Length: 158
Image 1 (cartoon, rainbow, N blue to C red):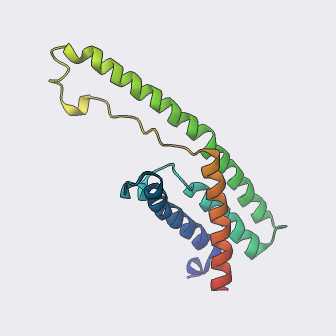
Image 2 (image 1 turned 60 degrees about the vertical axis):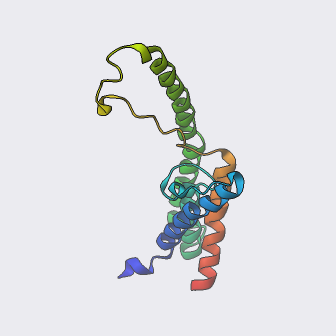
């Protein structure tokens, strides 16, 4: 039952759930549209990936100290994850936008082709997911979310 006493693990899970949940009201404030699909989607403000890895590192720091090898591993893991969220995954999302536009344009060209609309739906390609990564500000606030939530949980639980 040591798993249930693993503070860094539960802080990370809490940060993921909190960051995913808070995306709904943030999006509502920004757009006046309630979108519950944000609870399970990638991208958006704040980054749940960043919240999770910073919560993990903060939890490890609180439990093992800043000088522990385990903190070093979790900190480097956090940096790589956050860099990936703002870099590689963000660029993949930008490419998806362009590819989806190309697909739309090609569909218009072939709109008059007699057999395009007759094809079964499974043969038609699905749109690529465009919201894959995060803007740097989303990563930053996701990181802050993980740190502050973990410090709050540590204060309340310990």
